[in-house]
Length: 113
Length: 115
Image (cartoon, rainbow over all chains, first blue to last red; front, top):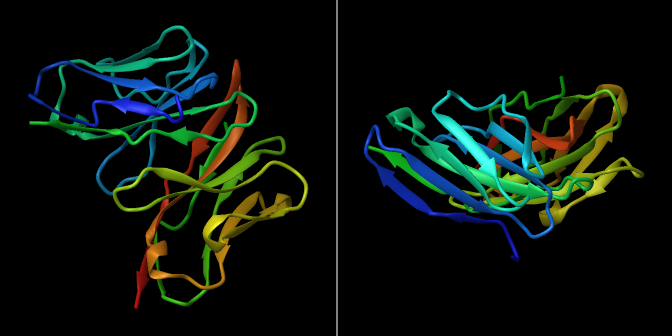
């Protein structure tokens, strides 16, 4: 597509429920990143994919968080048993492997009530 | 490990005054360096980037940044700030990681502009 697409744009969920956030990167971009941005905070790195593999999962806050990428394209970030502290904007970005400029989606605003 | 430091969490400048936002990085080789801006309610937008060559790079909206290898810095500057420049600014470095390139962001600097 023309840009990075994330869905849903907004998600309100009850504490304890599981949520799935989707990212559709720019076609041909092999690197894909997930970040979290809490209100008034900077970008918190979550996970990075190169193709379908995730060489760096160091930013995932807990084992409730997982992500996968299939076909070198779409990625899904899953949060199990959501907690109120998971409320944030989740940003996805993609880049070409070599050039490195990251293109961001508009984010998914997750609210856990 | 590679890292990016933005020492100032927030900065306030008067409209029309000059601006400098600091960024320091830790990386063994020559990095690819970027500045992004996030305006209120907006997504992140690339301001400028440095790959190689001239160490002073020009970006959009009148911004420029200078790469100084000796100081491991890539500070962002603007000669005269406009109220619309109020936003969050992120410095980023692209480094080589296992299996590919990885973008690392600083924590960001929030710019406030006063009349």
